[in-house]
Image (tube, rainbow, N blue to C red; front, side, top):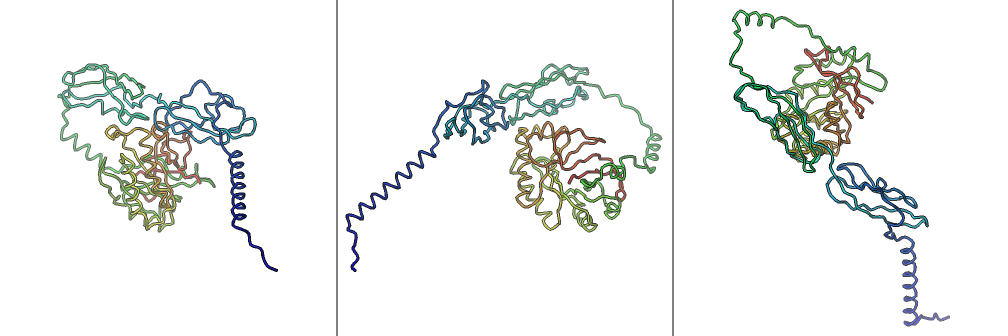
Length: 417
């Protein structure tokens, strides 16, 4: 039987019909899935302002909504100014709708000023009070920091002054303090006999009085904790066999440090000896680096340097960013948020290389400076019972620890599993 072939005309007609069917299907899908802009299904609160760096979403500004929010991403609040907010919701007819509105990102936080009640200086000494006081802002890299009041560095006396810090959003902090200018021309006469006596007394052996490791072990060692120490060249030569026998199960070792702001990186002179002997005695090892990093680029560079030093060793505990150079913070011209980003850059670089990162900080600095961090914390708080209410993985509870194997004091740490 002979097969009949479709004519060219019929093929064209079938193709047109197929195209029409596909277009109809596409239109139906579009009509059923399209998201229509519609602000009629919700009302907003009166206050449409968000604090800079705050974690907010559209729902935080909605008063009432007829339906349910189904897509509500975090709003970018890292810059001041107007910000358009967009979210997706299902209205009362179960149709997808897009709501949009504007908020304003603002900064209402005062600059942070750490100032003493009084400062003393000899007559005639060159004094830069404005840089002596730590004056930083959460948002501005360089807030305006001024000493208000009259004083004469060449005339002895007590001067009542004020320190005023103002940021670009006109948030202001003001503190009163005294400047004492004294005449130090009169000095005490110290006899040779007194010097000889003091020298003789200083050569006598003094028994250490501090926090015994055994006491910390008894109080803090549980099934969910470990107790250890952290060391650097300041501890000199460590007998890790004795440290292990004393009950320590881990040690945090300083790999190195930066020589001031913009300075070179130096390997701790005891690092290699410490890490080899610690591992040989089956102690878990973590690392810390003492940093003066003033930029994300610098912090990343430091992290890569650290990785190079530790790559051949078994590092089972975190690698820590240790920044304590707050006396130099003013000259760095960094915001508090900016410093947190510096720390994040260091830690992110370590974690991308397969290590566990961590941030070191004291209770006060964690509350006031490191408040934007999201990393694990090594808390420094020298007390019997810490009242720090943030999360922390490790606690450095003293700097006057006494343990067999170390001549002198050492920091003692509790690690939480």
